[in-house]
Length: 454
Image 1 (tube, one colour):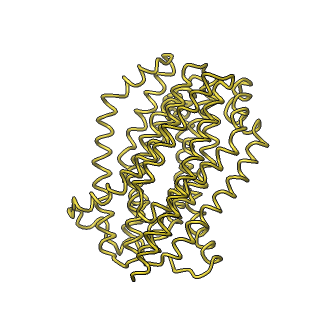
Image 2 (tube, helix red, strand yellow):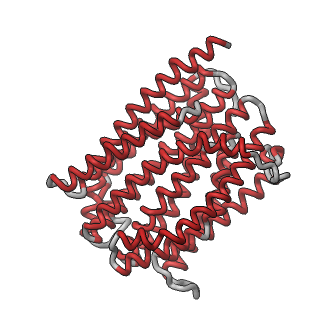
Image 3 (cartoon, rainbow, N blue to C red):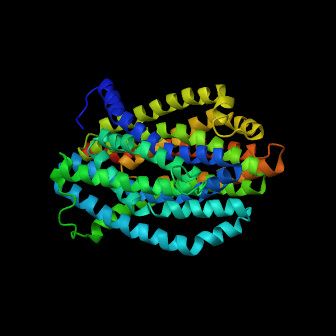
């Protein structure tokens, strides 16, 4: 990354980082997309099982990944300060944390997965598919978590194309594995929706292998010597990562948990409703990769400028990123609404599922705009390493606004399942507004004062 001086240069810098991150995010989400599409083609029960499995796994994965994302702003600020050795130490301890957390998640899953599924009172076929799908995914936890730490390190240096290339090379492998394991082709066992979990786990190991090779062999990553002297464990560095990463992770966790809870609440409805909701959510989440990618770039750029004490540039990046995110959300939301039946047809052959999915997608426009604001405002705050207040704001928005509003609208009005979409949109908009106000406060007071004291 280089210092920029004009809005034009900053816009270009955002897109230089953004495009590879977006391709990577879309590629990673494509694995979930393929899981859902192929499982739906296998049977509606398998689609519902994968949907339930995903609703359980997504909050856990996104929450834990939020912890590893802390490596990016910390490393970016150290990089902006030209403290190369400290960047290496942060990444090494991030790897230690990833191994510890992966082991803990596997142990917890062993004891609590079946009780959670039993509590949901699913049909035997859906229960079995959800369980086997999650077991398959568990074999990829360790490589996935380590990969996320290394990805955050690579992003902190502004070299986002590297991860994009790894993703593009791995994606065809995942697609083929999905095909052969779900449908039992070329002599492989026919596992149905569960096969998607095993395919994803194998792909995670491929991700990690390629990433380690590049970090060890290619400049500028090899100069940081990440995998030399891994005994440099520092509890202080781990605490620094956790201090920023835990609020980040919890914020992501509680956001994704809201969607998971909605899926669970919808389980009292028919399999058609569950499948339609998951399909619509899959579409919205796929598009959400754009503001998420902008957010990742924004955290790195703001962190880099703050580390270099260029607070005016950090402020300009923050609002430029939010503006770009909202404009793109409006455009993609309008496209989804316009072609909702065609999009819904990708997920199922059943007319009932298609019609209900298309109906859900009408809410995509307002949902996307609200989500774009809150995601990028929160990302800018992460670049300033201001995460605690943001966490409280999102917690209130998700759990005291999203869920209660959605539940009331779904159960005490004629809206039914559609009420949950309205509740989610209102809550996300509230989060976006509050986070934007917090960003203004941080920029106007804390860093304006610090800049004046230099």
